[in-house]
Image 1: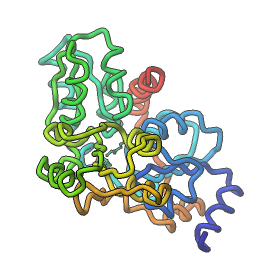
Image 2 (image 1 turned 60 degrees about the vertical axis):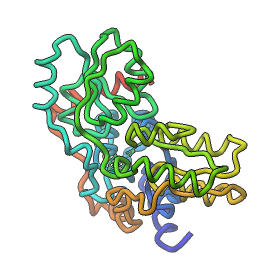
Image 3 (image 1 turned 180 degrees about the vertical axis):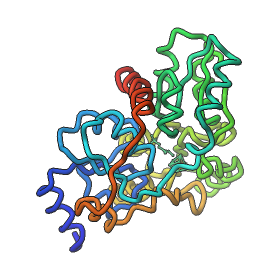
Image 4 (image 1 turned 90 degrees about the vertical axis):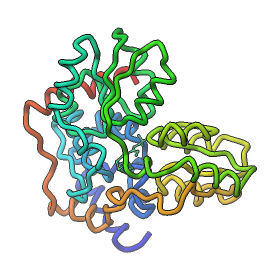
Length: 301
Ligand code: 13P
Ligand code: SF4
């Protein structure tokens, strides 16, 4: 532990704060956290947190979800401008016009979205809970927003539903091409390819395993395979490389980095603990609408 990490740990105890990090955060940030998880785990941990302060090291929608699920807490996003470009691809009017077009459909909203979009949706999902959530709904028609790739993956898994897709995507995962997947497998023919469902369907077609960040980590930890190609953000690769030095990990492509996830510095976390950052605040109507969608997700997933 370096000096700033020690300072954060001691101040965290003094202030009674809970630090949660996503798997894409830089390792020094993960190392000062009480828990590290995928979006679904982070939402659940935030919901049942007893500490007065929650510091969510990730991007804005994650900290907003923590605030919505546990509104009495003071929630900080350490780097306030860390967003998710996919979340910015959709606004509430887009959802409302799809609702008018498909009045019998339920709206499933990926958590990578604003509170305002969640508020006009029926239920949220994460990559690890999307399939179960779509299956759980009585409606045959499902409007799935904003990720067209995750939506197409779920549509394949749940063929009895008609999934209406929106044209959003993660610029980082969508940037992987099938040629990248083929080249990585050709270079390491013994390796299995583990891919996040935010990647394109023609990339998923080459995968040996498809799952959330937590799913990919679990698979890598439990498989007998000795060589793996990681098809998600480099944070997952960094964790595995450090934790399992006896196995060989490769990235499906170079520079598979989410710049927003990497914005959090230890100094930002410290600034939250020193009261030098503003906590998350959201309009009351968005909080209430989004809370219902998020709570439904947590209760089903
Ligand atoms: P997970 O829910 O799989 O952690 O994914 C979050 C995310 O933003 C992926 O890009
Ligand atoms: Fe958003 Fe993609 Fe970054 Fe995940 S990896 S936070 S979906 S931009």
